[in-house]
Amino acid sequence: DTSRNMEFHEIHSTGNEPPLLLMIGYSDGMQVWSIPISGEAQELFSVRHGPVRAARILPAPQISAQKCDNFSEKRPLLGVCKSIGSSGTSPPYCCVDLYSLRTGEMVKSIQFKTPIYDLHCNKRILVVVLQEKIAAFDSCTFTKKFFVTSCYPCPGPNMNPIALGSRWLAYAENKLIRCHQSRGGACGDNIQSYTATVISAAKTIKTGLTMVGKVVTQLTGTLPSGATEEEILAHSNIRRSPLVPGIITIIDTETVAEGQVLVSEDSDSDGIVAHFPAHEKPICCMAFNPSGMLLVTTDTLGHDFHVFQILTHPWSSSQSAVHHLYTLHRGETEAKVQDISFSHDCRWVVVSTLRGTSHVFPINPYGGQPCVRTHMSPRVVNRMSRFQKSAGLEEIEQELTSKQGGRCSPVPGLSSSPSGSPLHGKLNSQDTYNNFTNNNPGNPRLLPLPSLTVVLPLAQIKQPMTLGTITKRTGPYLFGAGCFSIKAPCKSKPAPQISPSKSVGGEFCVAAVFGSSRSWFANNPGLKREKDQSKQFVVESLYIISCYGSLVEHVLEPRPLSTAPKISDDTPLEMMTCPRASWTLVRTPQWNELQPPFNANHPLLLAADAVQYYQYLLAG
Image (cartoon, rainbow, N blue to C red; front, side, top):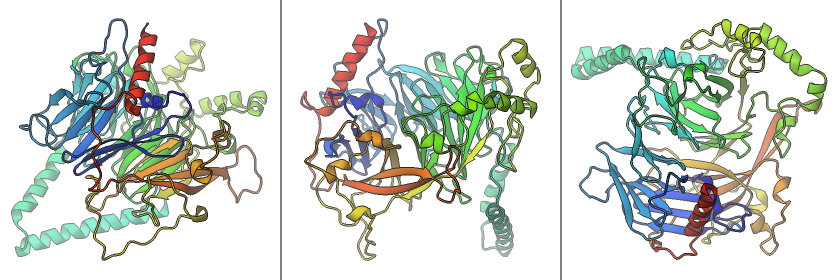
């Protein structure tokens, strides 16, 4: 798991470049690494105490004159969900233990009756994810703040997918409540191609043959009739079930009331930011961008990923707007999504599947087609160029969009109305009238909605199972002449026994994060890093860690489409990717443990001290 807590980017007090903080879970414990800008990996924590399902280093909480941190002297804190809890009597994976990395003692244990699937945290709350339930605890006192019991079940790999931003919490709701439904949401159908049609037809034929086979085997007595009755009963229950898949609810963790969060026709909308349909299938994974205004969602099929812009209203969620900016099309085959990561400027999204492939998509925070002008600059550019503004094209585009009645997709076959999804409630034309009578034609929560853009991945990076010619040292090494040479593993060689606990069932777990390049150190170990060296890259490097403990830095180089006859601002993009450096971080059985209490100069303690110091300054 790649930690993306911005607070722990203060490990180096010089304030230069934040290090990468990586956490690896094993079947016999866990490990924490730091990789500073110099590229030399440093082990921060290592322990062996049975399988670990989830672990998070908790960021320093947000304090004020009215709110004090009860555990300030114990931080940094490590939250762990392991097979055997501190009490020893609870069922496996049913408690969260909070350990102090400063003193080594356990400061808090939170018990549950059902298994825990994941942990999330920010400056305000600690979120414990259970099956179809969510429990949130205050980050200063770890007392229960609120809980949700209406989550839609997901088959996996995320049994209960949620997204936690700096303030908002998004989860999959099990029903759509019209009175709370926000404007907008998912628009249009998936991309229909010849391949998709053929695959769909093949699946239909296979399903029909399977049904015939079951009937025949049941008649001949080779299959117990009870099994078929259970299947029929299960199908009938699904038909009668009132649960609706693909619905997302976003709540404000600051303003939501304490106790149970209930989205129903009888409940008020206090704390509910948005409530909208995102997919027709169950939600599989979702993530906020660093600003918390964009939400990327995926369903269980894994064909398309949706990017939504959340525009809130202070009154109620029904007045909020959810703009469907992008549909990121991965492919026609099914795949389970396990990880989503944004670049820091929110112009790139990486979606990783359980096949070990990471798909790199270009987007804009404000929508629109990615092109040379938007993604070949080291900085984010405005939505309209100077030429488009001076020529008055912005006003012309707004007028055309309003005449067409809202959202117009540039892709044929996609819905051209904001109610393209069957789950959508029709938008009232009175909204447009009110918009102009109030002399506010630029209100983004009202019509016309922005157009939907379909984006294909510019790069698909497959993480290898093994890396050839790996040295024992923890520093980076270069692949020969920039070539990614991978030796085929010997078939007779048994699989490594020390492997992370989640690598089961042929699934290949990876996690990705963007960061500044660290491969320069391997090229020039004796040179000092120039301040302007990182600015020559348009895109940050992409770091992908696999479940076998290998971290690879990939350099991404977007460029104009090579087949374009003429290069202009609107020219489409293509991307070249190249692996530059690798770190082998998996530990061996002979590896010594590294447990707290730590010295005062330990990087995690220095980071916590720096963050807490600034928190107290901000709180006055």
